[in-house]
Structures are given as structure tokens and as C-alpha cells.
Amino acid sequence: MREPDLSPHDVERYGYTQELHRSLSFTDLLVYGLVFMVPIAPFGIFGGVFQGSGGMVALAYAIGMVAMMFTALSYAEMSRAFPMAGSVYTYAGRGIAAPVGFLSGWMILLDYVLIPGLLYLIASIAMHSLLGSIPVWLWLVAFVLLNTVVNYTGIEMTAKVNKVMLVGELVVLAIFVVIGVVALAMGRGRGFDLTPLYNADTFSVSLVLGAVSIAVLSFLGFDGISMLAEENKESAHAIGRAMIAALLLAGTLFVVQTWIAALLVPDPQALIRDGDSGGTAFYDAAAVAAGPWLAKLTALATAIAWGFANALVAQLATSRLLYAMARDRQLPSFLAKVHPTKGVPVNATLLVAVVSLVLGLYMASRDDGITLLSTLVNFGALSAFLVLHVSVVWHHVVRHGSREWFKHLVSPVLGFVILAFVVVNADVAAQTLGFVWLAIGVALLVFLLATGRRPELVLDDTAGADQGATR
Image (cartoon, rainbow, N blue to C red; front, side):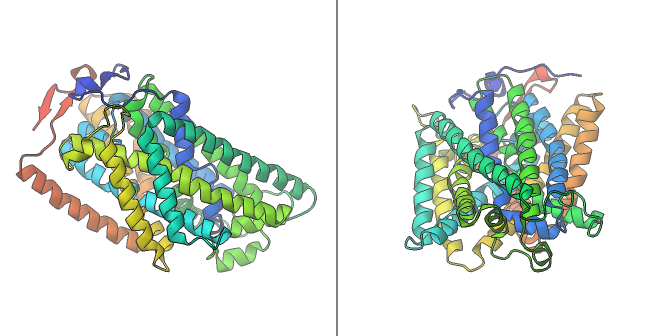
């Protein structure tokens, strides 16, 4: 049974009042997704992926793009079925059952709560390395305040800032690519070859898949587009199309820039052997191409992209998740308050800012702050993605008898298997925190059910679901 296309105003059909401003076009959504993923994301983790892949860093990103495409397709299907804010929380809650939705939202909340603090910390340390007279904590406070003001101003202002930041990132990336290609043509580095895609001396399936588990983290962010479903002014299809387009564009840029950088690495064998503890491998490659100025430019671009552009949209997405869960009485109701004129979940936005500031300042005081946060930040999202794939099969095939086998069965099953591999091979610390967080979520769910706060999720009968509320 094929479900009808829904207009962007169908939120009322599910028992909600339209409160957020519907002002985002497909282009706005696409820009948002690209900024969230950061077109220059490999700048910061290039060394780790290079080491993990035995130098085949471009191959790791290419496989990572294909792997995440299955997740993007599942998002596209569920965002069309349920065009509302909340992402996996909404899709699993309505596609499977309300308690499953709560636990999915709880798991992805772990990622969304931690990632702004991580981004602020990385950017602040990078800026301190460029301007040592300003302490890390002051940079962190400045980034948090700036992004909070922009997000508080309204989604329209955030969309405008996103476009400016995206152009800036693409300009820096274009400079690196052009200068890098010219440098290789002039004989710097190793010259042009295919080793970043395939090197028979180091290739093994386990090696590449291990690197993919690192590279795939650069693609996380496209899913944030689904948080803007109630601010999308076009058809429900726009959300899915924007996610797929953002993933394809970002993936292509990742492959191109890492291919060039891999050929410019000063000592590839040393990087594979010793790793990149200082996180400077990409900047060292840029220096080979054009000297210290290009290294400093790429480092500065990374700091601004992560601390301002990426953290800006991460803070926005987190506030929308809190808003969606709060209006269903799964979180304190004050988080569902929307500003009467700006149309933003104001209390949720301010809470994210406070948590990010406290978390960032605490981690800045630790020597292992970045490493610790990095190992924890993605476990929740990947776990929630597993439930997303299950919700596609359950909602479309089991509940509605869909016979579109690739979209509703083959694709989500493949996506589930790939992500399960990544989760199983995740850092032990990340697994431990993930399961502790899940246990807390289960306890909270039991409390909510015992106190009669199971969400009232109205299902739209035009989509083939049973009309009524699950209580």
C-alpha cells in the first residue's frame, strides 16, 4: 500500500498545533545539512582515518558514503510518512510504538547533547593555538554566546548565517584543492596515483572496514535535516531529497580532498605507523602544497567551521529534539515553550547552550577532554539509526503490507547490518556509556508509564494507520 504525499502543514493531523515558522526551502535544508556535516570535516580527523585505512583514506570515505546512503534512504521514507520534528523519536514512536520512540529519542539525545560541547572545545583549542593570548575557556564562552544569540533570533537568521558559512568553507576547500593539484603536478608530494583508493600492499577488508567506522562519523549530521520538518515550507519530499543530496555532495567533497591530501602527506609510512596524536596531518599536507600559510588557513577554517557553523546547527537540532519530546510529555513541559514572535523553542535553545558551556568548560580542564568526548559522541546516534531501519520495515512492510521491497526491506536491512558492525566495533568506553545511558532511559520510561505519561500519538488514517491515540 503506497502512502499519499503529505503537505508540509499536516502536523495538525497528528494532534499538534503549528508553532514553528515554516520558512525553509529545499535549498535552506540542503545548506543546513552540508553545514552540519561540514564540507571540510576530514581536515580535523584526516590522520586517524589515514592510519586506520593504511593510507587508503579516499576509499574509506567512498565506502562510508555508500554505507550511510542506506540510512539516508530510510530517513527519506520515514520523513515522508511522518512530516514532523523529532527525527528518530517521531519515526520509531509512530512507526513502531510510543515506548520504542522514547528510547530511540533518548539514545540519539546522547549524541545531540554531547556534540555541541565537543565542537566548541575543538574550535576553542584550535583558536587558542593561533591566538595564545586568549585562553581556551574564553573562546568557548564566546562561541556558545554567539551561536545562542543567532539561534534565538530565529530560524530565518540561522538559515542566512548557514549560507555565508557554507560559502566560506567551500572557498577554503577550493583553494586547497586547486593549490594541491597544481603542487602535485609540479612534483611535490608523491604525484598522482591511485593508492588513496587502493593499495595492494596494505589492503584488507578488515582494515578498510575499520577505517570506515571512523570515516562514517564525518557523515553524521545529514540526519539533522529531519529535525526541521515543521519549519519546511515545501512538500514532505523535500526533507528526504535534501538529506540524500547533502550526503552525496559532502561525500564527493570528502573523497576529493582526502585523495589530494593523501598524496601530499610528508611521510605516509610514519603516519601509518605512529598515528596523528596532534591532529595536524592534514595541515602538514597543506604545508607541503603551499607552505605554512595554507596550513594556518586550513586550521583556522576548521576552527570556525566546527565552533561556529557546525555547533550552530547542532545546537538548533538538539533544541528541536527536546521540543518534540517535551510536547509529548516525555521531558519537562517548559522545554516545549515556543517564542511567540521568533517561532523558536526558546527554553530548549537556552538549555542546550548551558549544557554545552558547562560540558565544554569541564572537558577543557581535562587533558583527555577531546579524546573522551570523541569516543562517546556518536554511539547514541548510531544506536538510534539501527531502530530507524527497523521502523521502516515495521511501518511499511509489516503494518501496511508494502511490496516496494528495495526501499522498505532490502535497503533498511543492509543499513542495519552496516551500522551494527560499526556499533559492535566501537570504543569500549563509548559502549559502556551508551548502555548506561540506555539503562537510565529504560528506568525513566518505566517511571513515565507508571505515572500515566505515555505520549498520546495520533496516527493519520490516510496513511493507512489505525486512527486514534495510543495510551
